[in-house]
Length: 200
Image (cartoon, rainbow, N blue to C red; front, side, top):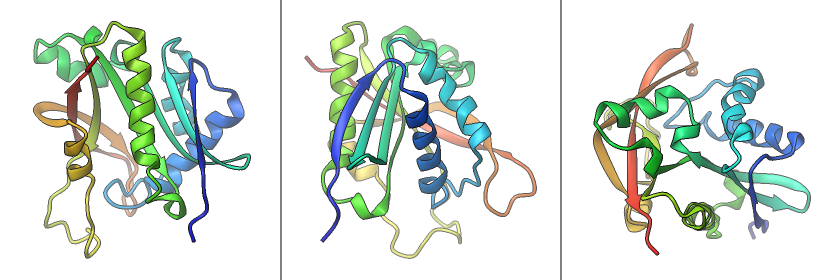
């Protein structure tokens, strides 16, 4: 039987120890396909600093007792770094209307309990309550279906995202550099946005 977790939402700045928990989860979960991320805490702390600094950010954490076993984040796209905003600006689309979802990471033992849906529900509710956004959006890494590193039988999250009303946005692509497993140095990878309108 899978261990059970409870989900809590936090608006605004998150206490420092939990930020490190989120950083460690990102390193652990994104090490797997499709990100193959060979991460480190120093980079993670820098990445999460935008969320910690935004008054309107949201952190949704899954707890098993006092232990953080999953996390999802979000913030106004206008509060994120230029590299995330640039595809929208280049396409002539309003950055101020977008609430951006960062990672949604959960340890394998806690999957299949509806926590992924809860992560989206809580972040969408937070964005809706702020009252000034037209849509929510997130990025997903683009990988070749024929990549030999793709695990046999791997099922992506595309069907899950589509059922929640998200639509892939071709042309809205950000290029981020990270150190991939087996790489001598970080290299850029493309990530394409998915978005959906905020409903009342």
